Image (cartoon, rainbow, N blue to C red; front, side, top):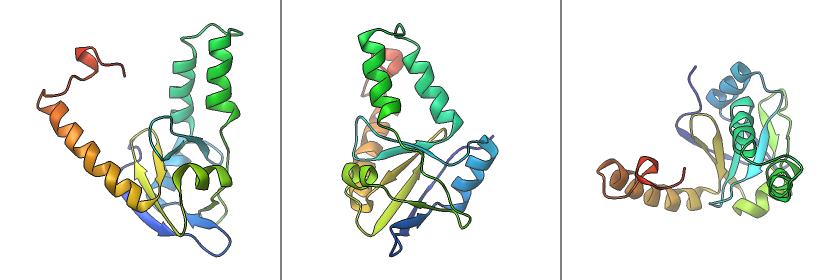
Length: 155
């Protein structure tokens, strides 16, 4: 199954809604998730969004911690308690919440970035800056200049 790929920039309407790109909506439909799962990224000024594939990855990570332990509870609060489930209306729009605005700095435009099992929601200029650095890092990793996960760096 093809995941989320490419990137798209759309404008917010007067009610604070934005159209999710049609290819991304198609992936969500195939995924079978009702609505959208959103959580602030822990390592950049973006919001991670998706459906069952994203939730499966989060569940896999949380299973590494014993349930009812302080570490598991902290992770559950950060990954589930601070998340949101915006609905997608009949026209494919979602409302941009305060959490998304505060974490990303969105004002009038939104950039959606496909990442296979999830997509990210970015303020367009912040995405352009992050993308430039990510491309430099990826090229360095592919050429062996930066250690990747198989060379001791955590995933």
